[in-house]
Image (cartoon, rainbow, N blue to C red; front, side):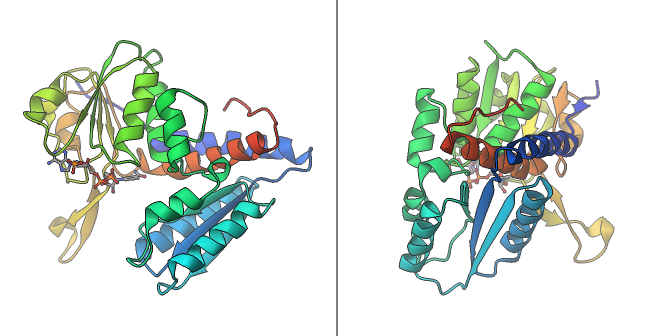
Length: 296
Ligand code: NDP
């Protein structure tokens, strides 16, 4: 059997088009959602990510506010900027790009963001809302994963879901989203015993580990839906000396022989993260003004 490849790039494109339509409709009410992205330091991967976010924000008709701060920025200076963005009526969403330089406590910064503008969904208030089943802003990557799962499986109730990884930004919110869909959820991590066996019982298997191709084909239950969140850069000698390529946490060639549906890396979960950030910015803009959030 060869798996159905879940095309995250195409799904994200469609989602962005629907967001652009909704933004156009809002402009009739004199509302233009605005997203502020703050980056501290020169990390090239973060710089590229922020540039892509800004471009896609403008492409869907929203306003993009970029704040580039030097690596020497103090925690107090960053907290001061967050306070100004919280108070700025033109700003609906605030994203502080992680990781932050060592002198800044990232958790303190996350907690300083107004939960109504917390489009990353990292604030404890939004994490708590997800935990208690109250509507709130949901972390972008897990939200994107759920949309991709639902694109191939409509009713998730009663399915066994295994999430490998328990980070606050991916694993834990992913598990909560699947629980909210009435899956029977297992969260695995570095201390899990017999991880292979745990994975083998998953109808839905989400890998968010950061270990290249750790999940092998024979860990996958025949017919499972496999979502690979991992982004790992590894050497690619076949392409030439010093060349690298990006692979996921799942051994794609093997797993795609067993799974019913699988996300590729790249082109699976990755493109969904920014699309979901725009989704959350639109949602925040609507909620802050008491406007209905359109179904996307
Ligand atoms: P973290 O490093 O924060 O968490 C990794 C998790 O994997 C931890 O819970 C850890 O367990 C677990 N883990 C590590 N080694 C093993 C192992 N051998 N067996 C089982 N579990 C293990 O990573 P993130 O959640 O931030 O990211 C995970 C991956 O997803 C990374 O590759 C990252 O680049 C990618 N990512 C992709 C995004 C996208 O847009 N597509 C967005 C965010 C992340 P423990 O808690 O016990 O240490």
